[in-house]
Length: 333
Image (cartoon, rainbow, N blue to C red):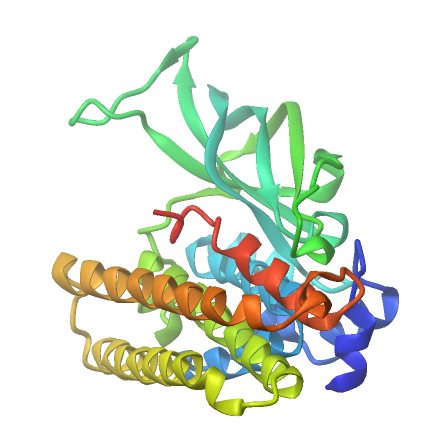
């Protein structure tokens, strides 16, 4: 995939060639059932693909991860909506959006009037649909759950109902084009709203707790990017032993992820419920693993010379991508 890496290096946005390659390999639809045009990957198969992409280029792995991850909401959509979107499209279906609650949805008739500005929609320029979370209002007042928290629902909107705000200016992951987007007083039918914990499809992959799914799919990206950094570093350093700590940390992370992946797949095969204990355990392991990878990368960086500081060099590109990725809210604590 060397040619693909070169296509992504230093780009502000993916080229048509890169986007066509993603579509031809059906990567937006890693988790979608074959009945709806997807690859229907198991968790193990999908993570292997995502790791390889992240090793090739950070922006490539990150974009496919988050957009295929947004397509994962297929499992939360009503059958009618899933069929309409995934079976009746003449172009690739690519979801993406924001996990933040940055807007409101006022109940009106059989739907909601959605308004707000949401940040960090990875792949914004080439999304076919935008997903978002909104606080639910009725007669201008926020509805509350029994515990006093705001009622929140998720929505999927066609790209034509969204205004992209080109404001992504991070030091890395540039080609992800993770822009903000705005929705102004758009009425959305109730059937295009959903909840993360309400699953409408019985494919095994959709039985995974969503927070676990998010943790492991992002975790594998850090492992992939760290592997890429390690390989490039070994090409620069005269003494390959200087990368031993990073190599060992990558191996530990990879083994831990494989163990948890096997446990997750056993749970969904056996119909075992995901306990809060397991969910927390996976999250903590992933968080600590990313911190260890970051520490090991930083220890090598000063040895790499001016090449590591030069923006046109791949090692610098990988470094900036990795540490931009560490600022994702899931692991930025």
